[in-house]
Image 1 (cartoon, rainbow, N blue to C red):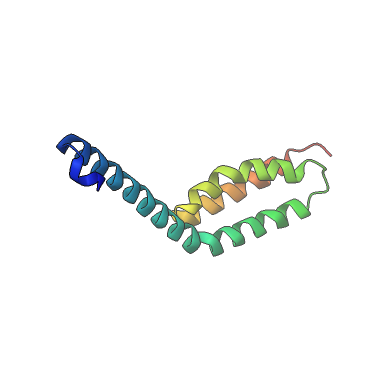
Image 2: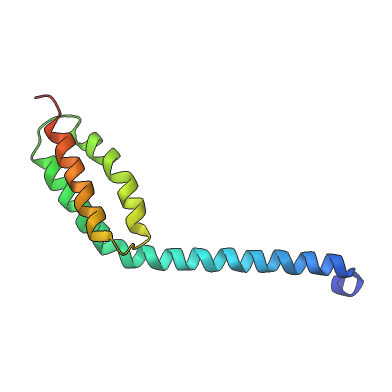
Length: 103
């Protein structure tokens, strides 16, 4: 087999690569678990933002809200300890931005 003819440096490099692959997969698994745990909060957050947009008849209201919701949504995917504050701050920003749209 190939392992029998590898030098110690080659074997070490292969092992390092394998560890890096396993570490990356593990990190992805943990991230996925956080996202699944945060999903109900994110859905509720987006629904509240959609309700703010629905009250505003401006054609750009949805676009403005979506742009403002992007960064907080990414933060919420990490299931932060301050999730409630993130949600309230983002919704306040959306509401202010929607109120500033011209009639």
